[in-house]
Image (cartoon, rainbow, N blue to C red; front, side, top):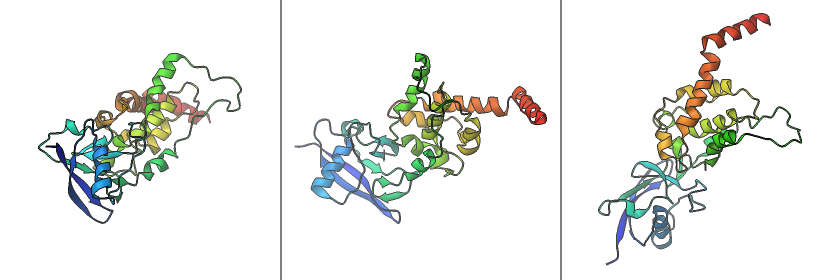
Length: 249
């Protein structure tokens, strides 16, 4: 007898929705995305889900599996208890378009507010020589595939719904990568504090736990940003120097 698995898949749109049960025959190496493709092909062609590469590099197939934000293409079916249904739902933090497809456009709108790499001389013909240790430090952040799982699990965005005060973990590491770039001349502390809202993060590290690229978002990105903001705005010596500059002007 062929082995099967039950999936409870969210079906609906922004107005309403509910779970629908599907039973799928399991094949060796099957991931949840495979199971959804079987459903689309054999049982219900109207099921909507977003995917692209099926290699965990495009970030498209983000969803919540049994309440945990994951990539559908990395969640192997045989990792789940065989006697329990697998619940598949859309990302909670973002508006639902249909079924498992969410509107994540807010992330790109926020990302567009971050000023790109700013060089001292943007027209220079000289190569941007950097120490290998500087390359290694910022290269980690470039691994981000923009799956937005970290954005989904962030309690400031997910539970408190405060997109108005916090850009979220994904954009914190983008700002951190630019701030730590040895060729970037822009002081990003004010932007990180006032616009991106780095102070809203209370270091729960839940974003790091769900990152499929294993980026140390909190330890290597957000905490250093917080330290830079603290040095710029709350260090007493720096505050005296700022006051002195204002009086001199």
